[in-house]
Length: 153
Image (tube, rainbow, N blue to C red; front, side, top):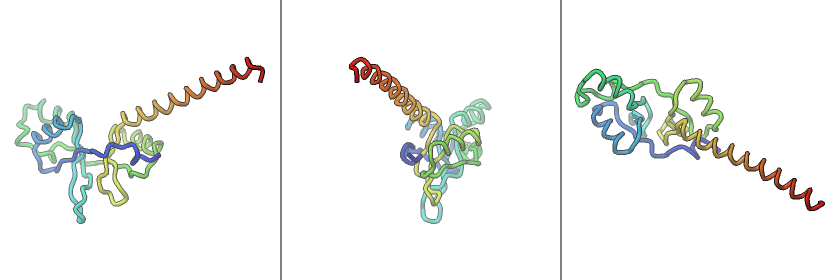
C-alpha cells in the first residue's frame, strides 16, 4: 500500500501572498489546522513551497497582537517543506516524519505537484487497524485450535 492510497486528496492550499486572515478563514471553513502553501509551476500545477499551521498564526500574530489582515502568509509560514512522493510506502513515510520531526507531509506526484496530505493521525489510524486485525487473527487461531482439539480432529 502506498501513501497515495491513504492520503487525503483534499489538501487545502493557499498562496504565500494571501493574508493571514484569509488563511484563518480557510482553516475554519475546511476544519483543518494547517494549509499547504503553494506556487504554480510552469505547467500550472500547484507545487508545495511551505506550510502554515494554526499554531504559526497564534504564536506569530495573535500572541503579538498584530493585525492578521496586514500580514501575509509568506511572513509567518514555514518555508522549508518536506514532501513525500505518492508512491512511498508507509514505513518510508513514518521514517521521514520521524527524521524531520513533522506530523504532516504534503503528498506529491513524480513531478512535484501537490496530490494530497498525510498526517501522523492518518497513519496511526491505519496502523491501529492493521494491528487490531493481526490481534484478531491470533485470537481466532487459538479458538480454531481449541475447537479442533475438542472434536478429536
